[in-house]
Amino acid sequence: MNSIQHLGSRLVIVLGCLTSLPGIAAEWSTTEAQLQYGRLDNPFTGGTTSTTILTLQHASGWKYGDNFFFVDFINDGERDGFNDTDVYAEWYPNFSLGKITGCDLSFGPVKDLGIIAGFNYSADANVEKFLPGVRVAWKLPGEAFLNTDITGYKDIGYGDSAPKEGDSYMIDFNGAFPFSIGKQDFSIEGHIEYIHNRTSEFGDVKSWVFAQPQFRWDMGKTLFNSPKQIFVGIEYQYWRNKLGVDITESTVQALLVWRF
Image (cartoon, rainbow, N blue to C red; front, side, top):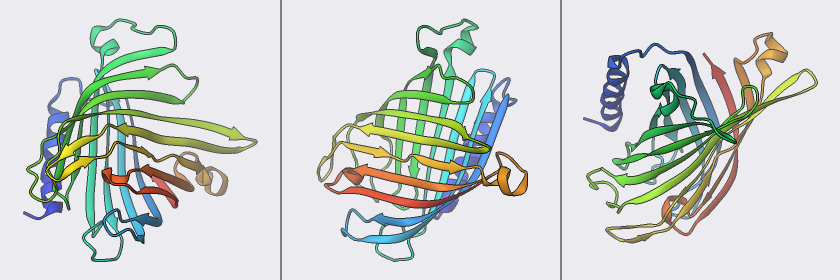
């Protein structure tokens, strides 16, 4: 079974699990296709390569919480052993303690608390990570949101294509902040994560800071009278100690988003 077939079988399992849960009907749902283009660093050769990324991203809320997942299809146009038509995916189901208990758990700036269970998968390197933990949802006005996720970071892969790593932890801030200037609508959204250092079969893996903020303009509203459907902008990627090695990446990618 090749890497794409392997990912497809896992997505089928995920969707099967979701649809088998009681009360799974979505209260809200957003699905996007994102196209990004820019020059990304290869942490193993030290060079940079023009890279195209097609992302399918989905977020939805249901009776007991919410779900977020994305799949990246990555191609850097070179056969150098890194980002060669790679596939990368993450899934984060969050179980809202407020929804489950039926109690208002808000206090101060906190809106809700949740239990989260993340899963990361890289097809080319055959890497699988499990990230169980807690979520703090913060109070923000309007359609803006901000979460803080504090999770474990456990290697559950076989280590046959990438070095097996020891356990660590992650702290991730993720959110979206829409705003308007005159009649034009914009948003700043994305995440910033910290993953603590750990060991691998080959030695130490450095702690990293990884940020991917996007700046979007609602082009569909202005040009096609279709608000919240077509966006253009940029994604700034900052990665200190990319993949745990001593390389810092700082790059801007062009961004086109189509919301279904």
